[in-house]
Image 1: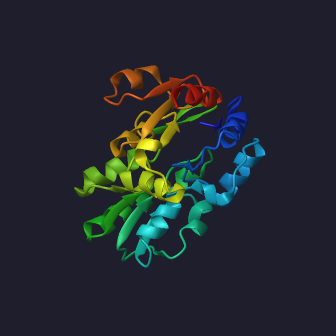
Image 2: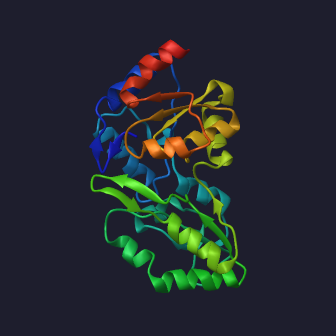
Length: 247
């Protein structure tokens, strides 16, 4: 929503400043599973956003909380391993299998190799539970849409006859954690994003929603979805003005 492959969305940083100036409390919730929270926060500050590390909520944090103390076979980008504190990472004999997402490097070739996926399948066959940081089918890059790890999650679900527990958006628990951090009631909170599935899913908790026409936005996905955002704006840059009218 704020950038595509590191290229900032025009007006995004100014919108965040305007929202803070208007007295809105902010929480940045992301399904990004390729970089640590510290690095993600630094990248957002580098494109001009006013942001403290503790305002950024990530899926590895959620995994660390849910899977604390358990033996986990993790197929994820090495950069987020530090954010999985409290989890015992193992190569076999796992209590759980955890899948992260892909990035634009060649690292997914190694993380999601046939050997690693077959190892994960074997662990599931032996009784391990399946978790994923998200179940996105693709994500938007400067080169266009790229396949994401949701395809591998679905493949393991099919092969092992299990259902994955999703830890990030659009699960209610992930949005509830953000609301708790802000001490906010759902009906008074707005979820803003570019993904009709992951972001607008916050409606299930009673939150109001804004869909932006940048990044992952696709008109056909909007037409086919059963979800109807409260507001649709061209980009995050338009949000402060729209909220002022709405509220």
